[in-house]
Length: 435
Image (cartoon, rainbow, N blue to C red; front, side):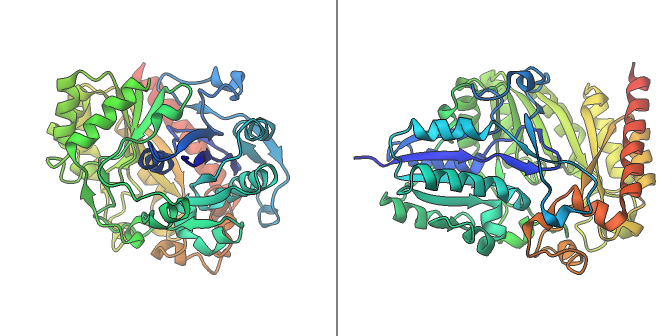
């Protein structure tokens, strides 16, 4: 008899959260590997199409499938006592998941996706409910928190923590042979699907000092173009029309996978709106890339631009300088992109904030006619920039990695408020100029 397995994407505990094409891609790829070996079902607390999702919040979904989550205000954890923000739980109600579990035949295992390290209270909530309602089920954690903070993840009491990409311990626990070959993620488990995600590559060739990927040991590699195209076609068959690239370096060596993938999407007439929330490297956004991406249906462009100050980038990955950003924006404009759909990410709260020239960088990006988005800094243990913060916060407590809390702790609420206000003002002016 095949084992019964429940896949769970937990609720979010944080000061703020927004559905920015958020999907548990690693969990779904694991589900794809288990397809045929197990009876699978999925509960995603932050699925906008789920029947349990708040109708009021679902109605706020924008044209690209994004929108707010239902939320419940919670008492702030002690480590956040100095943070003048409300702390919330985001996602479908806990009672809905409990009713879902109660209606299930006893599962053999529950696989839980973990994401940001400081979202672990949602993981703990799921474990508590599973232990109470199905105490014999094996509980398995995988994903970023499980990998980055493995010891802390084990303290939550799962039966197995999968750190990294090695799934052999999971298959051993389930007594299932380790599948070989490419498989499609288990998108069919969603009762209704409007948005999805895809990765054409794994790893990243760069060494940005704030990013965990260079510390992960994962070597950059392109996936099979054929496998990626079949994955995109499967997403369309499952109902997705908005698909986000989850790649860390989508534009690196594009002739190997991105260009042939986009050409195949065009050739097969796949009806997809693509999005790039993981920050494109503007230095590699050539005129050819811009034209092809537009032809293939890429609708929103997010460009990494931490600072226009060259000294800030020394030893930090040297992602983008002013000329790179300006050239990329011009290529997009000439390709016919509405510049209101182009956004530059600017980092707020970096430990080398003084060298960043943040205001000048924000004003420069805005002068190009594009939007600016502040990306709050999260101190990730093991990264060079994260370790610079060890004296300011307790990096061994994952809550202290919170990207809302850290800039306030390091810069002060007044300074953070100034830059947030400036961002809104610049974007408002850009919107008026485009009318």
